[in-house]
Amino acid sequence: MCTPVRLGLPASIAIANVQAQVLCLVWYTSSALTNTSSKSILNAFPKPITLTLVQFAFVSSWCILFAYLAHLYPSLKTAIPALKHGIRAPTREVVNITLPLALFQVGGHILSATATSVIPVSLVHTIKGLSPLVTVLAYRFIFHIRYPVNTYLSLIPLTLGVVLACSVEFSGNFFGILCAFGGALIFVTQNIFSKKLFNEAARAEADGLHGHQSRSRTLDKLNLLCYCSGLAFLLTFPIWLWSEGFTLLNDFLHDGSIDLADKHDALDHGRLTVEFVFNGIFHFGQNIIAFVLLSMVSPVTYSVASLIKRVFIIAVAIVWFGNTTTALQAAGIALTFIGL
Image 1: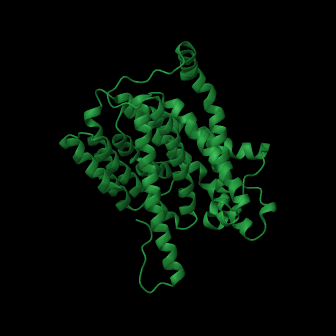
Image 2 (image 1 turned 45 degrees about the horizontal axis):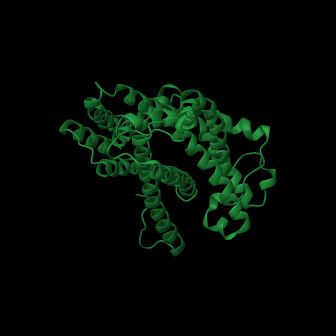
Image 3 (image 1 turned 120 degrees about the vertical axis):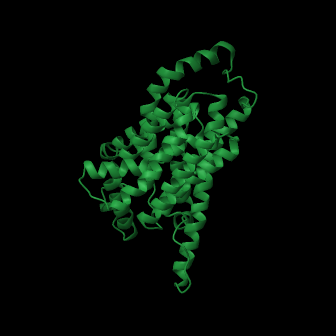
């Protein structure tokens, strides 16, 4: 999972390892709950851009709320390292730094939510399992970084597994598969683009720990998360208004409520509202826990933990929704697990 605890290590290191393992489990759980909750919402209310807009609003709002609570109760800054420095006042510099990431967030989340609305969660994350392949190819052909032959060979079962898992869906849900793959491409591009930015964020946090925060012109990870989500909300709002907003507003003004999908297992209005709140809380949780883990473990360990998280989400989604899989799809998912 994460860095294992080994006998003979100093007590402080052993405790840190146990804390990282517990956080990994919480991270996996919150991510799985977010994804299954998103699918439940979209089954009853097939408006993926509305869901995306609400998620951005929750993340930025929770960042501000937790930063305020950390100001009132300083012990939170020790318990959650990502809360150490609070939220900076908005400036042109802050917007210029976070706007490119916000654009990636808008595209990636809208495509992922659209995919989730039309194909199973397990298939969406199986397709996203191609991220290592896309990353390796990008670094090879764009940055001219060579990898060992074993690295390329390990990508064969991953690629074949995704193709087999998608084979049954190609005829009826090609649009959903295309959206899932597009979302994966955007998030991989974001990760490559933001690598330097997150390295600078880590240095900004280190400067703050040594009393030099006022001299740092870079943003720490909490500020990146808050401003990226806030700007993504503002950028998504006109898209939402044009694609779903006017229809929803007309529907609400016409009969005082919003029409939901007519499915036997769909949520009613009350449960849907609660599910949106539940989804927003856990969506924020998985983001902030990811940042806490980044400060505790090495990048390699974090990457391994992320891949295991994807396997966990796929397994939970199959069980949660009782998705039926053909033998071909099952073989494809198994190969994807091996490739990951």
